[in-house]
Structure formats: structure tokens, C-alpha cells
Length: 382
Ligand SMILES: [Zn+2]
Ligand SMILES: [Zn+2]
Image (cartoon, rainbow, N blue to C red; front, top):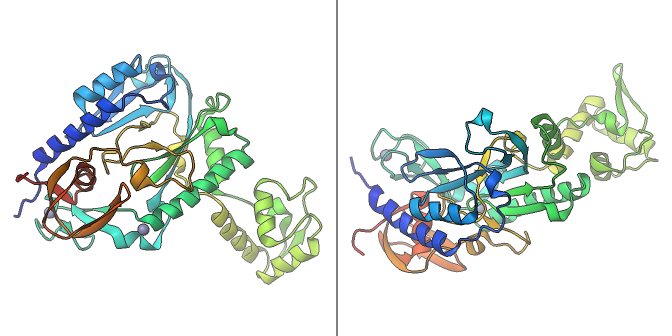
């Protein structure tokens, strides 16, 4: 077996660059009510530690600099006793958090920059199957999102932002958007009047945003025997989801005849219902509802480093101009030698890197990115 991993040296290198980051970036301005949050982290050996609490940012930073975790998490919930066991924490509310992930968006180029890294020996395979190097390990899909990917996910994030502001009427000052540090965006809503929503109410919110269960009846089309009836609702069709659907169909409150024609063109009630589902899917947002509906979950801490990429979970004030591979790439520039497991091209901190040799000298932020992705190891010959 050809053992190509170099785990101890990799972890030693990552620990050093992560520690330097936490030592120099000790502010965490988007971490509110720290004393009421539960904290947890994943160590470099994959062990997960939970039920921690800190009285202030200083205590948290001291812990991060001392123990240097691979990933840091905190609860969306506010607790009276955050370090107690789960049933004795005294839940006081939780921020409403949304997660949009690139892998759920079905982007055509996604496969073009996906690598299949063996979980056991770290070998990079050409396809998703049992590892050809060790014959034992299964492969994980590792993607290096490209510009097109980020454009697509930012568009999805923009849709969610619009839902929160327009449909749910949440004030902008309560909505914070973060790049997750890898391949997604997190929306944190910390409106005090929303904090107390239970899991069921959150499920109603996510169903609404995804567009689950929009009924033809809502815009006045009912099944009647083998046919259908049309009676536009008195409350109108020009708000919320009704508006999205009716605008897409090109109808308004006076369009009974036109609507009848559209239903007939779609082959009657059932065909029309399929068309409505298709439109709802287009306007809805691909969010992970389980994440949002959970009121006891831990989330990646804003301004912490994402151990899957070495990029930072970064506040994003303007989706359009935000460039994840530049704006969230904050690790050191000092150069190190790495062994590459595959040839690849990446753009980080607005520089293009075309890496074609088995050993390359690169800035630490490139080394950290590729080691976190499992596509390179730190070289013994520095
Ligand atoms: Zn293997
Ligand atoms: Zn792409």
C-alpha cells in the first residue's frame, strides 16, 4: 500500500497558521450574548468537544489560541446555563438560521472541479468508487468551487434575502449574511421577536421559503368532478406567493378568463398543478430546512476558520461584490513547500495558481486550503 498521507506534519502546519490567525483576529464582532451560548469544537484528531461556555471574548480567544481547534461551533440558542447537559440548559430562545449549500443547487460545472479523495490513504481517485490505491478506503467528494458556482449560490442567497425582507418583513438590521468558509452561505436572523419561535413555527417559515405545498386553490383553481372551477380569491392574488405565481402566469385579479385558458392549455387541473409546482420550485429557495427548524443546534462561529478549506466564515455586506476566495482568505502569506496529489488550478487572494509539479512552493493560505481539502500534504523538504 502506498501511504501518501503525512497527518502529523499536516496538522502541525495547520495548527500553526490557525493559531496565528486566532492570535491576530481576536475580536468576533458578530458574536452576541457570548455568556448565553453553548460552544463546541472539532479537534484535529476529529474528536468533538461540546457543552463549553465562555464569559467573554477574551476567554474564548485564550481557548482558541491554546487548543487551536479545526472547527469552532456555537449554539444559535441562548441558554441560562449553556454548559449544563442538554435538558438542563434552560432554553431562552434561538436565532433563526438558514443554510444554503452549493451541493444542493445542481450546478453543471460542479463535477468538473470535484475530486475523489480516499478516506483511508488520502489518494486522489479519478472517480467515486473504492480507492484504487489501497483497495479498502471509500472516497469523499471534494469540490473546489469556481466563480460560476459562487455566482449561482450568491443568486440563491439573494433570493433568500428578498424573502426575509419582503415576504416575512424582517428588518435589515436583524439579518446578517455570512459566507460559510467553504461552499455555502448562512443567514443569521437575530430579531428578538423571532427568537422564541418553536421548531414547528420555524418549519412553517422554511416551507414558505422553499415553496412547499403551494395549492392551486390559493389562486382560485379548484378541482370539480373531472374538470375544474375558477373563482379568484377575494383577498386578492397580488401578495406573497400568490403574487409570485400569478406574475409568472401573467395574470391579475381580473384575469379569470385568461387563467381558465392557462389551466386548459396545461391539460386541466392535474397538469396545471404540476405547472404550479414547477414555478414554486423556481421561485423557492434551496435551504436546508432541518438546519433552520432545529432550535438546539450548534453552528460554525462567525470569523472562525472552516477546517474544510482554511477560509474564514466571513460577514458579507454586499452579496454581489463579495468574492469568497479573496475576501474570506485570511491566512498567512509566508511560503511553504507542499506535495501535490493532483495537478490543479485555483484562484485565492486574487492570484491564479497553476500547480503542475509534485512539489510546489506556495503561500501558506494556498497550502492550508489544499491540505484541508485533502489534495496536498506538507513537504518534509522545506
Ligand atoms: Zn485509499
Ligand atoms: Zn463551478
